[in-house]
Amino acid sequence: MEASEAQVINFLVAALSSCGLLILWFDTNFLIDYLKLFRLTRFTYIEEYEKELFDNPDIKFFDFVLIKEPNFLNKLLACPLCLGFWLSAFCCILATKSILLIFSCYPLTLFLYYIFKRCQKNF
Image (cartoon, rainbow, N blue to C red):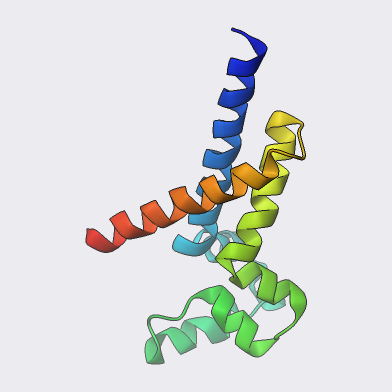
């Protein structure tokens, strides 16, 4: 395998990995489940969030946390575009060892994520 083919494969791996992390973060409850599993709920708003779910079943955990504590980190964690950029940057640098590829990896990550969201909406 030539170096350029390996770079393309690494680039695609970075985009798919960051897209997968976005799906995990925004479309599953894995964080809540693991915090409960390791009994770390007293450090978070999970109990309050679960009570709020009865009144507002459409609210996401990070949106709820952002309402409770509107600081920079919570804004970053609740925004798919913001978190997507940093996840893309991390995965791209890790996989390709190139900072310049971040600017093409990020749009591909968002494109893949929104294709997933569109497919999820249709089913």
